[in-house]
Image (tube, rainbow, N blue to C red; front, side):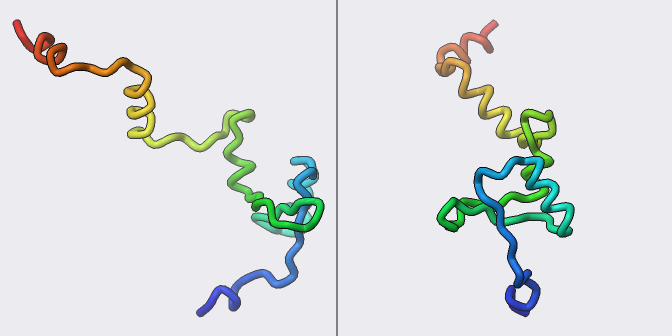
Length: 92
């Protein structure tokens, strides 16, 4: 099976300046889970998907970061720990 066997052939797109509310209406009206976003000249700028709308920081629905990414971000914010400081911490 190939992508051409399952893809949507009559593609609808929206302009990059389309409001989020209008984009949602278009997705719902056509039963789409995503839609290509094009510039004023018709060049592909990206794709808007249901997932993009569900993971919005502004709405508090952003995708949770993996625990190890949070650890690395917190670690990067702290000053580096030298081996002497580690040894001192373990010395009684």
